[in-house]
Length: 71
Image (cartoon, rainbow, N blue to C red):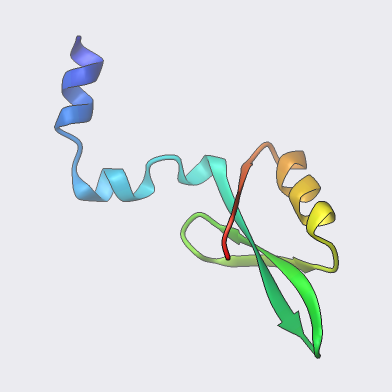
């Protein structure tokens, strides 16, 4: 039960960073008139822009992250 009590008392700062090391976002972007896919860290920091959605998702998985789509 101690774990559940800890979760109930989590601060807003702790909640904001919860899982940040485990998540990445993939969203479509337009670069020079061509659709590409940007990979962002959970805090919104852009990492890499890739030409294909499947490559972007594979890159995220390769780094042991869970990919979430943003649209």
